[in-house]
Length: 462
Image (cartoon, rainbow, N blue to C red):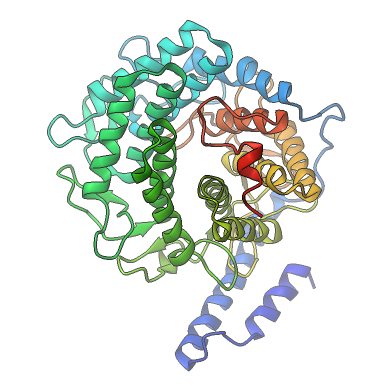
C-alpha cells in the first residue's frame, strides 16, 4: 500500500480535534473526501507522474549573474518582442509558446504586472526604451482602464481600451498599484505615486469592511460590494500595496495598515492546527471550504509567508516571523516534491495531493521565499531547497528556444501547458523572482525597496 494512501487512512481514523459530534462527523466527511479525491487524481493524472525527472544540467549554478542575465536575455526580450501593443498602447497578454496572440482582451491586473516587469528591466539596464514601454503601460492603465466616474480600474477592456468588464476586483487594483509604485521607485515619477495613492485610498474607502475588518474580493462599478466573500488574494494584494506605498512615502499610516492586514491573515485566515492559510471566508470570517473543495494553494501559502517575513522585518514583530516560518514548513511538508524538487500547487489540508501538476508561479514564489528565509535565518536547509527549485525550474520550465517559462509541467518536468501568457500569466512572477533572487544571492537590496531586508533589519527578527 502506498505511503500517501496509508497516511490518508490513518488521518481518517484520527478523532476530530473539535470535540462535538457534529464537528467530528464533518471532519470525518472531509477527510474521506480528501482521500477519495486524491485517489481519483492518481487515476486521472498518474500517467503524468511516472518517476524521476531527467537530470538538470550539471552546470546549473544559481548565481546573482545567472538571474540577472535571465531577465535581460531571456524574459524581457520575449515580452518586448511579443507583448508591447504598438497600435493601441499597453500590453497584449494572451500568447502561445512562440508569442502569437490568441486573444486581444486586456486585463488591468496584467497591465500592472507588465509595468512592474519593464520597470525592473529599466532598473537593471537603464535602457530608455524599457522606461518608455513601462510608461506607455501606465498611460493605458490611466487613460483606458481607469473609471473616469468613480475611479479605480476596470477588470478588462478590448484591445483598443473599450471596457468589457467594469467590475473592480481588489486583486486587480492591487497589481495596478504595484506597477505604478515600482515605476515610481525606479523613475521618481510623481504622477505615478499620485495615481497609486489614489488607488489605495479608493480600495480602503470602498472595499474595506469597517465592522469586521478585511477587504471584500470584488465590487461593482459604483464600488458597492458585489459579494461579501473575503478571499486571500484580496488581502495579499493590499498587504503588498501598502508595503510598497510605505516604502515610497515613509508614512506611518501605511505601515499601520500593512500590520493590520498581516494580523487578519495570521489570526483569521490561518489554520492554526495545521499551519497553512486558507482561501475563502464569509464576511464574518467563517471558513468556506466548499468554494475550493477544501484545496490548499501552495502558491498562496508561499506568497503569504514571504509577505509576513517582509512585514516582520519592517515592524520587528517576532509573531509574524514565526507565522511565516510555520507556513513555509507546511509547504515543505505537504507541497514539496521529494523526487525531483519543486512545489506542487494543489494539496489537501491533511497533506494528500489534489493534483500532480506544478505551476510556474509556485516555483517562482518558492525560490524567493526560500532564499529570503535562508538570508534571515542562515539555515542551510532552506538554501538547499532553493537550489533544488531553481535547478528544476531552469531545466523544465524555462523555454530556451522562444524565451519565458511554460505554464505547467508534471512531477517529472514533462511540459503540460506551453502557454506563455493568458488572463493570469504575464511577465511578472518570473521577472520578480529573478530580480529578487539576484539581490538575495548577492546580499544586496534594490535601492528604495522594502522587498528585501537589509542586514540590520534581518537581525531584528528571530
